Length: 565
Image: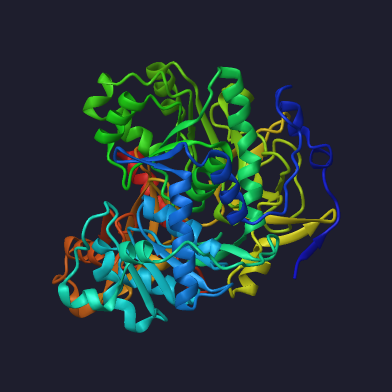
């Protein structure tokens, strides 16, 4: 299954990054073999009466959420959902998402969360690939599910209104769905007794493009996710202790359909008894109002969110000094952005790194603990090994040399769902340790701090989202006028990378189909964060001798144009 290499460099053997850990920070933690339902139940027993979530000014306690999730778990079991079955969540951040996440796991099933931005084609792909027969969604998304239901394994469609109001779907469709609110109300909280093996049983099937290709499901076990949550908890605990913060109050806008939001906010939040101020979508104005009203001390986000906040007209009216811990992830943080944040708030900006296949966090540079080393994602987190290898040979490289970042730890996925060959490509063994190839180019300094410099593959980062060129090209090829297509990312400091498509038209359509025509078509057939922002019709695409499209050449040409302009 794995390629073998035997030699590890001294910096890995000695874990030189540990010298960057402050004296009051642990060097290692113990990770219990517990299931996530156990963790959530323990949190409810310990902190049950405290408000844990504020959703558009409505308050919810852990005890309430656990009660509703137990009712949902019971209902799912009554529907025939059994251990190992996959249940889809197609919801924005909401109370119902939390209840669904807890309830599915309590039923012994596996969660697969679908992006609220997905169009029907993308929803259908994930449902078919995961084999999900049950989906929990909201009324505003029902039409998308209705369109593709017959081509998927779906049997049960549970529909809610996230504001707790009457379902907004056509009268004739009400009989075809299960009303979430009625289901919760009429079902007693008597969840099945499920024996879960935390290290083997998959809790979440998290879809990603991996390091290459079309989306595939990363199998994250209960142990993977709990381990990652416990690995990041000491960062918050140590920082809170230093700053005299009694309880973490966090703005919650990270999408929960992604492992970043699930691990850092849902699971770690339960362990820490966080209070989350949750929004179903990112809208700067109400978030700025919430900062003024609730005075949160924590905000986990991506650079695109911070850019929009800082550039909103109301931002100058907001006192940001309460946000002691503002952490960036998912995309590189511009140094200038970090400087602007400190100037505005008086607090340093922190940054981390991870990938879905690692649940997702592998590195963290909380500025107050590990230093304001702008451009660095910090040292590996607790119980994590990291190194730099030659991307082709997997041989470890010396300190300071550029290569591919590889990681190892208890948070690393079990493998890709039903894709053994893809799994083999991203793992190798060295020094008796199994390593995950991240696909990112990086270097490490003499203190064990890592710097992400580029990606070895063509994944595009748009506002923190991973966009996969091949998937978009596959869609473009379904356009009747397109003969050939290629998609690349074009650097843009505001969003990370803009998405640009190059298309070659079939002869009979040349002069009849415009770039705007294709752009509008893309908007209808791709999620909002995926469609190309720019389309250029070209005569031909650069190809290698074996006929492979050279995206690298297209990127170089774009860079040259930018330099000349």
